[in-house]
Image (cartoon, rainbow, N blue to C red):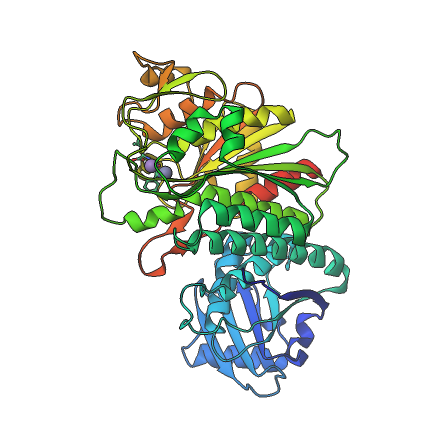
Length: 491
Ligand code: BES
Ligand code: MN
Ligand code: ZN
């Protein structure tokens, strides 16, 4: 796994001196309601000349790049206009600016923010996240890919009074950004590379590099425990399943942990209920939940967050085969509840339910499961917001706020008891699927049957964990949401 190394500094320098900052490039981000006259003379002149020439205006989305402007020390200057001073609008402008500076060998970048009350901590955090996002490049199985941008130092120009707060915010953003990078890289690796064994190795690497405690349960351990539902999914695959237990202990032992449960299907063919061929390659991303658990643990460990967190990852492929589970088969879950598997493609809930039961042993303060669970969730919410399913209003609000603050939003969906009807079975305590309508909700209702002993929430990230099309690849979501949620618990 490639290590991301980038330094972030909050540097005391008022706008009246920005043209004196050295480095390869200066990125000036202005809110659309800011006053460019606050810039020092060389930059204000440059701004005015660009506007006069019709190449720039104080309007959201506008950009300009200038080489060696007069009386400016930095070799290149980029102006970007954000819609306003919100972290969301600024993050967008940072990404645009960083994109313009991708080529040209920028190693040291200074960033000036011109917005009322800025730069704020939220903007600083967004800048670090955006910088790490901009330099990420998938290479593992594509050695011919161009070298990743060499950006190594990012300096946020600020008033001296804000320096300490902004430095801390940059560090938070750097940790989140590196967690996101880890999750993206895991997700992007093909199914023949990123196997359950690989996820276990990645967890062990994190144990060494970041001081996590990691234990990996093998098939025989999983059998001994009685995870009959998880094992039913693993039956069809030649790859050995792994149940990964990764712990970050940043608070006294007696403090109840947050447990994160990740769906780690390293490839989902559907099993005997085989998926159609079109876009099946994207089912290598079906371990996005697991990847987000690893990425969040990395971020928290890097920050030495004062909180206890347990990551549980059920990892297996979902394959057809002579030993594969069949529609109509009934299995016994770790909880003792029996499940009639009517559709082997609804495998995520089958591995998560046993992990949710296993979570009980940690006497958790809360359990959040994260899963690329249903195509129905993509239909409901598209690719902007993850689905949030949570019977507990306070916990739901906490997660929703964490997502908003982290610019990694989710949207609450219903979990009324009436939806549970759909899971009735004539041959077991429940079926693993209901009718098509409300498919994301019935999947959540299935999980709810296993999550009665602690405050619980489920995040369906089927629409947000990866992008399709030309920019196909993992997004690293919802690492930012989860990290913010847990940091909120630490405070
Ligand atoms: N991993 C898929 C969900 C998925 C599908 C995510 C497409 C993103 C895009 C999951 O295991 C699955 O196959 N779910 C089925 C459930 C159905 C059989 C009830 C689905 O959504 O079709
Ligand atoms: Mn499936
Ligand atoms: Zn799946």
